[in-house]
Length: 326
Image 1 (cartoon, rainbow, N blue to C red):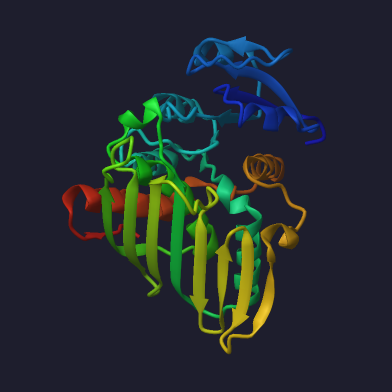
Image 2 (cartoon, rainbow, N blue to C red):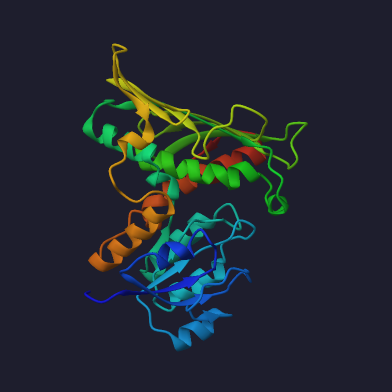
């Protein structure tokens, strides 16, 4: 395909649309205002509903975004897939815990691509960790600890969630963990609770999980911290047969099993020149469509991460250990 890729974007979220506008190899043929957002983009045709856009535009790729205060419009995804279109999501904001299973079944039934974006996999720390794991610097990874601490959440949209941490921010962490290890979680135990000083309910969460290959996960996160905040990505530590990797305070430290330091420095120093964050999702989607290859964010590949969150939600709600679907 020598010409520009024609993209129809559903949703006007400012974290999403400018990423497409910045690409010289893309022509944004229209915006569907599915969530009645106020953002405006000069020179881009805008449609109030999907049907009007489908009847008046020609496109190669459908890219869908959902603002923080809304849920993924599953009916629109289904409509597009059944009409024979692939759907590329910025991220999934599930309207129900098993939304991932619904999208997987839809993709398999229609034979269409449904992609679930995850920006954290393009963070420099995750890129570096993936490279070192791939090179065998850690050997077989057996343990992973993850901790995220963000300031007290005060947002009207939080009331739409029963377990806001597990349903929102944990989704991103699960995606990053999946990018690193690619495992399927067999046993999951999770808690969700509200500290007395928290503005919103269920801002804290913890997960203990065991994967199909024996990897152990210890995960904690809070949206009610007052100090010692972490990046949105959180801090993490990986322990492997040959060494360990710690990410803390924006710095990566790689050590051998003998304790010898192999690398220590800001994660930015490990940058490989690839796009970061949401720009990484957009780049992968464009390259995938142009090369007619499967995106790294295909629902078939992302489902283990979604199932970890789904199992954690079931466990937190039932207050007992749950078995992951793998």
